[in-house]
Length: 209
View 1 (cartoon, helix red, strand yellow):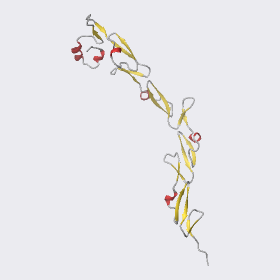
View 2: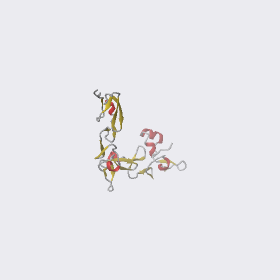
View 3: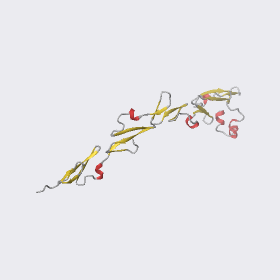
View 4: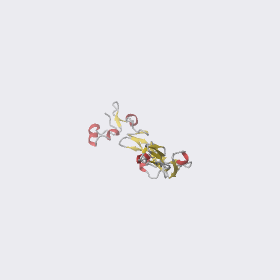
């Protein structure tokens, strides 16, 4: 075992002295001359200064970390700085921060798109996506849109689509069988009943004799 500054990170002062004596950290004794020789930690410590540049110094070393990284003196490497956590208001309104190695980027929230100036502006889904509200009218809102549905249709919980109403669930054909259609329904009347203009089944009137 050789004694380096790396050893000192994991040994107490007493343990270091017991194992290494008064030998200076960062040096090894040359068995031929008996003199201390500087250890190249950059070469001998696996993964030292990861993400950065290791610079050997007499009896030690230093890590130079690139922009967006900071030195971790316990792990002996350059760690990415999460700018999204450490700083506020990095992104414009209607955008959120995404951390990436060494930096960050801003992405527009749902319902917004990036303008030529770099800001996030409201998308007009009603004009961008034809028939987005099939069987209804599209109304643009900040960051979204809502559908106003035609008769015979109802809007979904997120107000993003119009779906057919099954009128037959309400049993509108008292004297007939209900058949659901897109946006409406039909009554198939039982024998002895006839369909009215209101789509209802009533008893046929018997002619006078």
